[in-house]
Image (cartoon, rainbow, N blue to C red; front, side, top):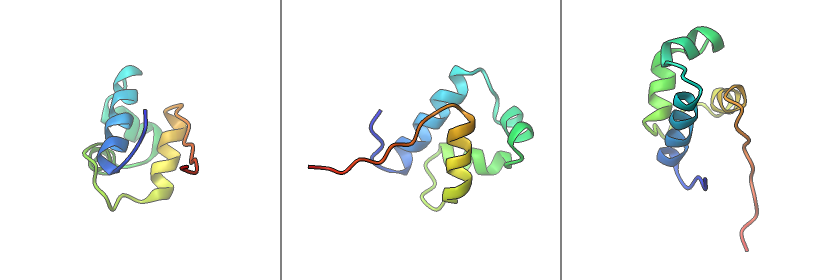
Length: 70
């Protein structure tokens, strides 16, 4: 999936969480991140903290790849 904005990132995270059958509450307990943070991130909040976001992406078994266009 190509991520083009905070909404598509949130959608990818939500889809992966659901694929793993994790609730936001379970993920919060497992990661120490708040349910509010996870919910905001999944809804595409553009000001979500990048370090927490990257940590969550890794925990969910997703890869974050940055490629140069062109």
